[in-house]
Image (cartoon, rainbow, N blue to C red; front, side, top):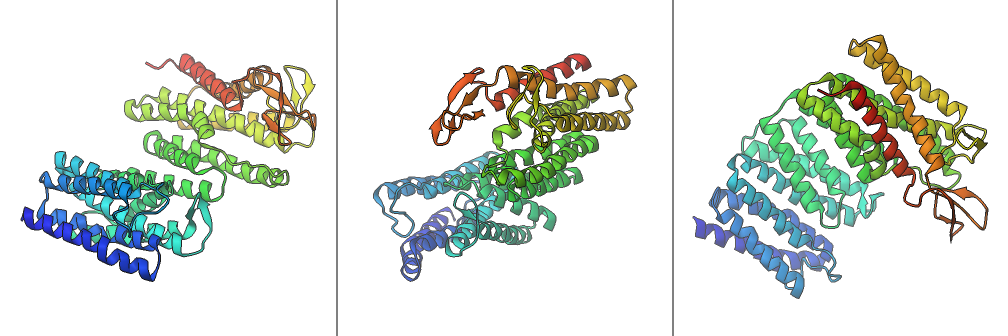
Amino acid sequence: MILVGYLTIFAYIFSLIFIIGPLVKKVSNLETSRKIIHILLFMVWIFLDIFMKNTYHQVIVPIIFLILNTLSYKFNIYKSVEREDKNHLGTIYFAIVITIIMSFVLIFPEFYYCSGIAAFCLTFGDGFAALIGYNTKTKKIYQNKTLGGFIACFISSFISIFIFSYLYNIEINPLMCLLISLASSIFELIGNGLDNFSVVFVSFILSYLFINISSSILLSSILLSEIIFIIVFFSKSIDYLGSILSMLIVFSYMYFGGRLGIFILLSEYFFIFIVGLIKKIKVRTKKEKSSRGFLQILINGGLGTLFVILYGIFKNDKLLIISIISVSGCFIDSVSSDVGVLSKGEPYDIFKRKNVPTGLSGGMSILGITCSIICSILISLVVYISMDLKALDFILISSIIFFQTIIDSFFGSMLQVKYVCDRCYKVTEKNICCNKTTRKISGVSFINNNMVNLISSIIITIIAVIIYGVK
């Protein structure tokens, strides 16, 4: 059986490379040839299952092709799959990731069918995404990835997982298939050959969780997090990597933080989203980008997410309070800044006792401060009622949350680096203005807005930890 398996697999793959590939390339193009072969490689996992299941041979086969693909990349042996520019390692990455998952399931057989789902998502999902994306003209949504490719990845992944689960009698319902498919489509956007890894690993992990831990809270957490990604990414409120991180944060608050954690987080996300859309209308006239990025999301939600995960593990209510204070403090700071920008007058720097240009760190507006106070009180009120706390807790939580605005303004005013443009004489936080390097006039060179936000977030979280003394 093993020998028959080797002969079958090698005959099949070489027929794809040296017969099917050249024929497709002749009537179409190289990229279509590459992706047709990529899709048809799904049969390799089936052959491994038939002839070599749970033997070391299931690892030897992809290792052999890893060696052959590396040689082909160097010497252009497979002309139907190798690009002439020599800057794409997709064929090598493909062999590497299959080697990894087949090695893993050899050690942990309970993951075996998860490897099949992952292989099908990689071959069908990633393959059709590139095939449709390359041969159709649809809107680009991230780097060279298109909306058509995204949809193709989702549909083909869903169909392939559904058929796989039916053929192998895997207990995965249509909702689970949908969630795995959508996650694969989201992580396929990474590109540069790395989508071979991201698609496989995310589908591999999710399929294992769904097969072994199919709880309603897990399903709802993943569903909600994916919905949030779609909203913030396609609205361009947050860039791709920031949207991925937002998705993970939402999952953590939903899965570990319970109803209160996710309610507060989503309320804050929704408010920032709406204010961001309003702000974008105004900022767009100035031809500036307003999308948040990965680092901003990490600074604003990283510490809060850590504490909500700890809460989910240890079930200590104080950890949840600290998490809410941490993430809400960052939220209030964003509210103060974003709403303040909408004020008609110039903000006032209370530490330098003078008006400053709109958008410059350290400045505070009546509109921004008022909104921050109201939001701080509302958040504290929700926590106070939901957790049946004392009146003192209501005062403490709202005060600590609001205090981050003051701390952030202080560091923004006194320490954040600021420059002046020698052409337009504008004071700015950017080192380039009017296509010319600006001149530093105050602050510490390495302390920019992100650093100020990080410092204030750490300080406010430490204050919360000290007051609520985790035991």
